[in-house]
Length: 382
Image: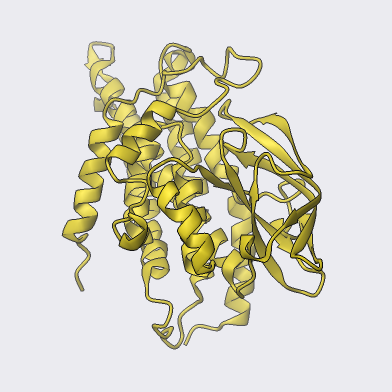
C-alpha cells in the first residue's frame, strides 16, 4: 500500500498554499461586532488569483480548461482553504462543476465548465432543504412541462448565493426520483432573501415559484444528487481539517510562549494532555477524510469490494469525526487561551464561529451516526 499523494496532487497543494499565503482571517469585520453580514460578497480578488493559478478547474477535464485531477486533490486544496478561513465558494463551485461534468449533457458542459474554470462563472449548490433538517431534495418539486421543467419550493441557507451566477438545486419529481437543476440566480420565478451564517457570511433563502428550465439545465441521471451530496460533505470535512490544524498551531504557539508561575503553559501536564488529545482528534479526522476522498476518487466502474460499506458509509464516518473533532479542538483552544481567546482582534473567535458553522453544515455528527447505523444494518460486514 502506498499512502503518499501523487506528484500532481502535491503540486496542487503547493500552488494552493502560495495563493492562500496572502489571506488573513481578519480581512473583514468581526462577526461578533457586526449585526449583519461581514461583507456583501465573497473575496473576488482571491477568486481571481485562484483562477489565474488554474486552481478553479483543478478537477475538470482538460478539454474544458481543467487539470483533470480527482476529488482527493480538491480536498487537499480545501484543507489549505480552511486553514486561513478563505471567503470563497471553492467547495460549492468546484462540486457543482464536477456534478455537471459527470452527469450533464455535452451542450451544458461546453457552456458552463470552461467559464467556471476561468472564474468567470461562479456556481454554488443548495443542500440544506427548507429547514436544514430532513432530505434536501424534498424541499423543491420539479414538474415536467411541455418545454422542460418547472420548479417550486424553498432551499434555505444556500452559501454564497448572492454572489453566484447559478445555483445547483436538488428537487424531487414526485415519482420517487431526484434531479439536479442548474438555476440562474436572476432567473424569472426566483427570489432570494438574505440569511446570515454563524460565521457571519451572507447566505440566502432561495425561493422558486414556477421557475422554468430547459431539459439541458436539469441533470436527471440516477445517483447524481447522492454523489454531489457526498462530495459536498467530504469537502466540508476537508475545510474542518484545515481549520482544526490552524487552531491547534495557534494554541501550541500560545501555550509555548505564555508563562504562569515562571514556566510556559505548555510544560504543565494538564495542558500537554489536552493538546495531545486534540492532536489525536486531528489525525482521526485526517485518516477518515482521505478514506472518503479516496473512495470518491475511484473510477465509477470499479467494483465495490465484497463486505465493504457503500461510499456513504465512509463519508458518514468522516463527517462524524470532522464535526466532533473540530468542536473539541476549538473548545480546547478557547479554554487554554483563557480570556485572550475572546478578544475580537485575535483570530481565535473567528475560527470558533467558522468551526461551529462547519460542524453543523450538511448534518451534525448525530445525524451521520444515525445514517451510519442504518448502513451497517443494511450491509453487514463480511
